[in-house]
Length: 432
Image 1: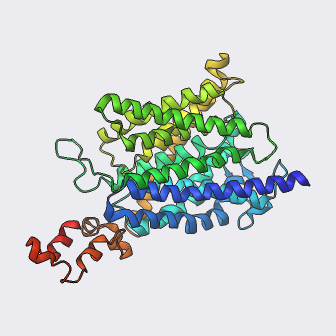
Image 2: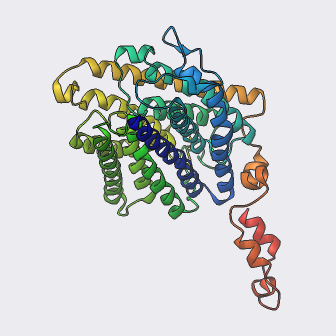
Image 3: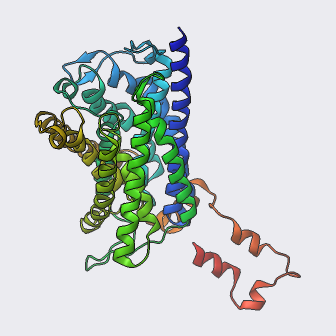
């Protein structure tokens, strides 16, 4: 009974940390997009935490963990997910709460890739479809004990494939179908860089995500007395640090300056890549996996640009490509039967198969969501809405009101038009 209480406290706290990661997603995306779209990305995170969370509780959890049908889909627990039977001493309610954090994280991966030009109503549809169908179905294959990939022996401790790869490649398909932001690519194929609005804000989001990742991974033990809890946590730290270090040093060597955006994505890539194997690999392997992910994110970002896919925050490179790499890395570095560590080829084959299946499923899901949105509420924001910025178009409020405070000063203190010769109306037009 004491272990039940201890596990309950641990998983409820871990769930709160995982759900707090949504604040990290919000700050990260708000800092990496342009100012006129910062409120919109924050509102999309609220969609994840409200509509997405409720849809997963009502239907998605049952699709994922309900009674198995043919190793493909769950068919029970709809509207009563807490009735699940668990192999550890933990109330079903605590497990549902923890899994809810994973589900909303999967939607948030998509949010960044389609930022600045997606119809807000279409994002609501997206949140429902991901939490009810896309994420739970492939999750059933991997994490339901009767899922067909689980029966083959696929290992994915905390979701490099089940969460990050499926979310990343759903995002890739949706971003490709949506098209780039206006002015992102030139007719000759070259890309224009849209400067992030606030790097310190994006950095704060990264710190929150990194903090939450300890619960994301270590919480997956579901057992406060599990001996692997500390090794999982330190592997998480080492991989994130290694990924960030490699990205930082590579950009310093290539450009003569350490790029903050790429360093951020290097850290996140290391965390994504270790998520599958955090309980199965050594600390040295975690450093290698994280370092390799820091390289992958740089070249994946270049590849995505060459494909003319506009991903404002680098979500596909971080979550999609490194989710796949992290899944395969388990087959290479697993301490008990990895290809590199033991010479055993069997697990590696299963991990590659699982990664490929998840990529295909994510792309199919992304295309399906795009088409449903296009035929119902409309998929892309109107050109006028995109030009104005989605903050004002969809939410009626800007992220920052410095201009209003500046221009509302009494004329006795500062007569802007008289001093500069520029009308206030013109300034507002330029800012928009």
